[in-house]
Amino acid sequence: MHDFSSILNHIAPHITLNEKDKELFISVLSTNKVKRKQLVEQPGYVSKYRTYVVKGVLRGFIIGSEGQEHTISLAVDDCFIGDSGSFLFQEPATLFIQAIEDSTLIQWSFESEQLLLDKIPQYAKVMMQRSQQIAVMIQRRVISQLSLSAEERYEEFSQKYPAFVQRIPLHVIASYLGMSREFLSKIRNQKINSKR
Amino acid sequence: MHDFSSILNHIAPHITLNEKDKELFISVLSTNKVKRKQLVEQPGYVSKYRTYVVKGVLRGFIIGSEGQEHTISLAVDDCFIGDSGSFLFQEPATLFIQAIEDSTLIQWSFESEQLLLDKIPQYAKVMMQRSQQIAVMIQRRVISQLSLSAEERYEEFSQKYPAFVQRIPLHVIASYLGMSREFLSKIRNQKINSKR
DNA sequence: CGTTTGCTTGAATTCTGTCAAAGCAGGTGG
DNA sequence: CCACCTGCTTTGACAGAATTCAAGCAAACG
Image 1 (spheres, protein in one colour):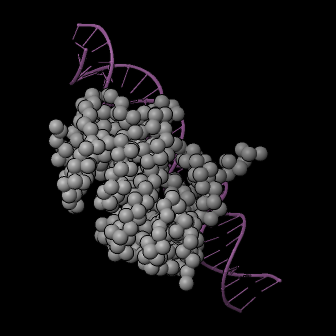
Image 2 (tube, chains in turn blue, orange, green, red; image 1 turned 45 degrees about the horizontal axis):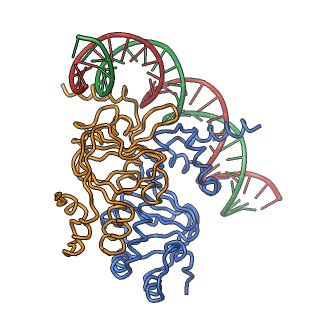
Image 3 (cartoon, chains in turn red, cyan, green, purple; image 1 turned 180 degrees about the vertical axis):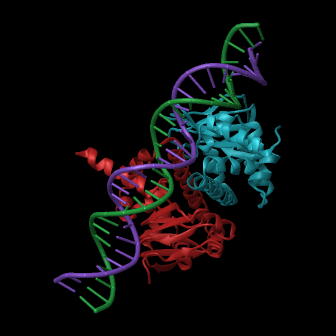
């Protein structure tokens, strides 16, 4: 049997599921291991599972009209990732979801999600708060993009997610922050040089 | 008594509330009229109400370090607006929420929200879907900002929200799309000239 | 009316992107 | 253990997109 304590702690830190609900919840989960570079979702295919990253790093990205990759979302240890639009409406995805490191996932199907929503009232409540929280996080990103320069965006990013800077390749961070890898490289060196 | 049909239709198009729930829901609502330029929320004050725009136009914005306004969200007829982070966590807001036109709002308090979440299981479910939908919309905006040029962003915006172009001043649209009002003005004229 | 508010225009400037070449690191096979 | 990949990062010269500044105009408002 697998260890689902991490997701239970994360999804339900403030509510207490009774034994029955906990059992139901665990019964729909399945564990999944993916290798570096492996795709979990891709454009054209419907997202069938909600995906929670137990350990590892994944990203969501699109490929622009001139072939450039744009990183839309990042997930490191203990958080959700996926093409949420595709999952929510059960329509073809627009994002690639890809592992950056070998990673361990917990997933449950769209049908299970409906079941949980119906059977466990608290599940809907908690997931509503999660969704709102995620919306707030994405909105913060919009704010950074609107109000900060490339340099300031990187500064904020590295303050906020020091772990990401270590584990995610530079060109991915650049495409997440909306600048070219070359320019990010320059910013990084400016910082290092100005420190001395 | 007020007419709450618009919000009932909008919030709950796919679920049917029984009479009791409908009554409870309506009992916590209050209608509010605001004038052009009036502030509904502002930084430093906790957002106490969920706000639904029945009719009118509002926007959320911040003021940057050099005094420039950045429009974070827009709401026209039949949608939600507010500093969702402030409402969710009941902590001081970071956004100004301001009426662009004279507008009619429906609001309910944070306490009422908790009540609805507890008493009406379907409320949580519907609001979860709404929140996810909103997250998807904001993410689409991130994608535009990352992958499109200023001109393409305006093109997309005017295709997607033709109504907004009519009712929202140019400098607000510019600050929403992340470009200077001057540049947007130029883009607009290019379009008009190339049409002939 | 005068005054505010919002929109347009052109020229100079700044930030960030592009391109091409070179450097470095980790992994693989001989 | 070394040589050689391959993938990722760095560097510098140059180009371009979008901003800033400054001024003028138009429309809306009290």
